[in-house]
Length: 266
Image 1: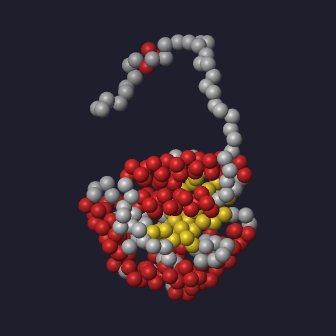
Image 2: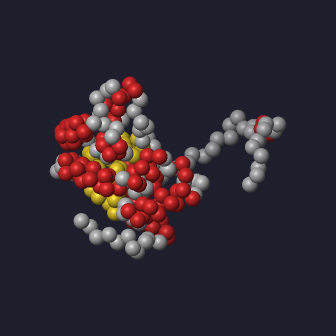
Image 3: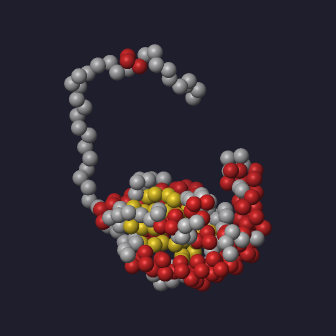
């Protein structure tokens, strides 16, 4: 397993410089995916407070949501509970020219559902047996599947939970399920290892990312994605703005007089 270099936290200035370089490449990747009608799924899994949300934000903040589509499904409805387990996830799979990012995925069954008793032991075992077959079918059908696990340490997770408790801007991130997961660290560790043992395959491998340093984790995740999807820069004609026509000219600001604008408090 890769060495954990999280003791030397990355400085913000260096992080932002490297992130911009990677985000430029993501824009090139985006055009390639559109051009070649590729279908890509990126799965982000990991413990609570591992940094999935921040990594996804860094990945998507400079690209089009029409190409990079984030899927964060809520708890299943009663109707969905009666369906085949994978059904509601398969409904979100990409069409040509799309990259779908799962902020948690069907692997909920291997993690939180198993640990918290939301599924039976038989359902958990059945999932671990069938999941690789479903993924193989998808990959053989031309879909690119990238599975990332963000691995945060026990002490760092506690620091992040405490920060959420004290910060009113992040308190919404804490739920009773999060605090219970904090209490069941080793249960989640065992569930994680069972999941890797059953679903880390040649055609759909897991890649682990140390995430004690959020900035390094984000850069490493994006770098891996860029390497996992071979792409080339798509040549485009340079855009030139046309001369603005003044035909039919009128005073378009005078027409706004008397309209109610928002109070300028800043």
